[in-house]
Image 1 (spheres, one colour):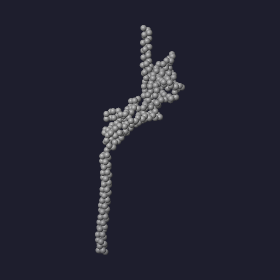
Image 2 (cartoon, helix red, strand yellow):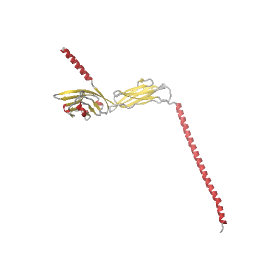
Image 3 (cartoon, rainbow, N blue to C red):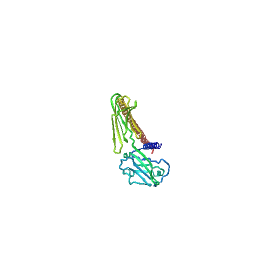
Image 4 (tube, one colour):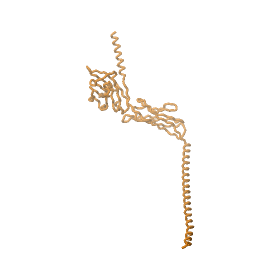
Length: 309
């Protein structure tokens, strides 16, 4: 029975090790943000920092330099820290004694997209590992709101080939681009898809769609960022401009211009008439004053002649 019991125990340990190896934490951070790599001791208790060693390192054994951050006897140790992580890592000092050994990674970039390992050692009578954890850091950046451009048709005829274009930028990782005919929710194949990388690690995307025109076109361009679970879309609804409406518009504009000209002429005529009436009134008033003066003057002269001495 003993060998059988040993075999069962070894099988149990093997299964436990396999399950533990799969228990990775996945963290998503946006480019340029600060990422918190979680590492928390599962049991309650207080820790004396002088008895602890906390190591954060890159999990890839092929890395020439793997030390991300080290805490030894309550002090940060930068002697073996990789240059890439210098001045970019912080432990949460107010939580260390409670078993929270999480690491804050500042201003993350594409090269930080890795698997990290947290190892906690405690020294009592001898040094032993009390906790180990792996964290997978994935990076992402939101794409800009897509801009959808489409043709403005001058006729209502169907069957002609028209081209739509859709663009978006400053996102990460590479997106999925979907063209959708909203009249029946049917996915359409793009005619062109161009994804351009930038120096800051983000991407721009440009896509075109060529289809036969219909009398009722409703097209959607969708940009999907799988990591952030974001789906940004832009829609196009056909605008018809026919020659009849153009003629009607031009006719209305001509009528408005002629109406404005007529109104201006009438205003000028009215102004001239008012000025003429005012001039006539002033002339009459002046004439009446002259007449009154002529009538009064002889009388005054006669009165002087007949006046007693």
